[in-house]
Image: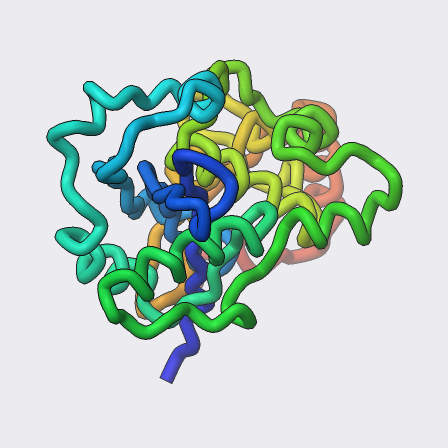
Length: 241
């Protein structure tokens, strides 16, 4: 049986910093990653926090009381969320914060809590790899030349997509020039979530990349033909073979 390496890159937005002070989740964004390649399968939901949005939080994510008023409560979507993440590791930037809020919401509706050891903390990974350097998501996007110009406000799904790219870099980096360019000629360096995901297909849990064509320079082709002319009685030149 083939072991599918499935991970969920996750981000949340909230009304504040402490669940114990009555702050709640207002957005969850998840990106499915298999064998370190986003599959395009995502989970995204806005939530009614059943409380007013503080101005400081609104300035961060732009989610107003009016916008969230008709959104579902966490209890109404908890089953779908838990089904989506399954038992996969959760890749989170500053994991303690998001896990604290997720578990506060789960505790509120008497659901089992998520074990802390399920979380893979990319903030911790970045600090270990680059001691003393800025380790925010924006700083890591700049370091790895990941385009985050659309991130004018925090958003859970967009941040999870960016984090998926950052996570791959922290694991060792994208393999530039090895067929990660899309059909539009966009190089893999512009984002694995776009080009690599377009190339990846899954068969029995394995990533299968599209066949690549290689342009042979004219001088190399001429040299090869000249070499073939020097061969005595090549098998491919025999009649009826």
